[in-house]
Length: 365
Image (cartoon, rainbow, N blue to C red):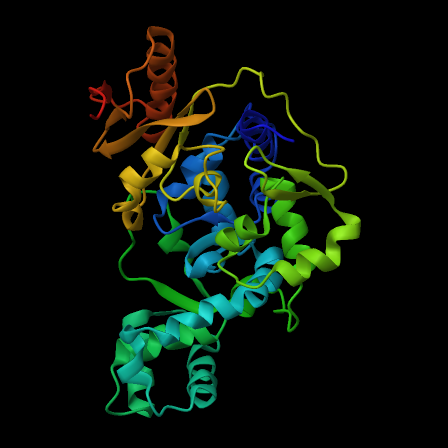
């Protein structure tokens, strides 16, 4: 049996959160498979909290030259991934991306449309171009009159592999960016999209960064369903463990398990960080009580602070002021460690600003 604290320490190690590592940003993104990118600043903070050294220009350069891209992948949400990984991860998770078209948001506007024809038209319009969704939708509506331009553009983003312009992933935004522009992935990255779905590779990469984990954990991370058959096929080549609650957990045969008693540093995680969202059972990093408390705001992302490896506070940014709100009273030593790490965060997001400050609020009740 593997304890929750061992799962916690193992997750932190595999997520590069036990200590900042000297790893190239692109290699770190690939190790993590993909980093949540709904808010432009999130992957920057996610890399800063994991790597030493890391500068804003490091990720910006990867996005500018197409070695990293921002697009819909895991859980049908925006992630930043390497161009090489996007070429196979997007096809692997395409079934969950495609489920968007079943929602009422699309239904009435695409009813009766030939989606293959719409996708071909979209690819033709985008060939050689990077267009804002508004402009892309307008051009699509000229070919499909009577349809909502925005829904047409959104639909093609679901049915085809489109990536966002580098400017939409630039540092500066703590919320969803406006004026998103899209391009054909192959043209932005120079990497041909795979036509097959490599679920075994997806699972192995997941376990390397998030394991040991259950089938339901992998499904929660990817958004896919019915992965049990794939896990069963891989069972002879995986290590099988049991969690404290008896859940069957899978891992790579050479996956290193951390010492559950290891001391770990305070870490600030950005909104939507996969270290918090990468499992169905998240008790290895956040209590059920806290998870339920913030579930209502999860659509907007809840940046969290890890203390002793577990979520113990939320944090927000207003200008150059960071406010940390503990979910429970902190011991003096923990509060001091949060303040010290918060000061490092301010050094990163507001270097040299004399007005920057960290506020440690009273715990929520």
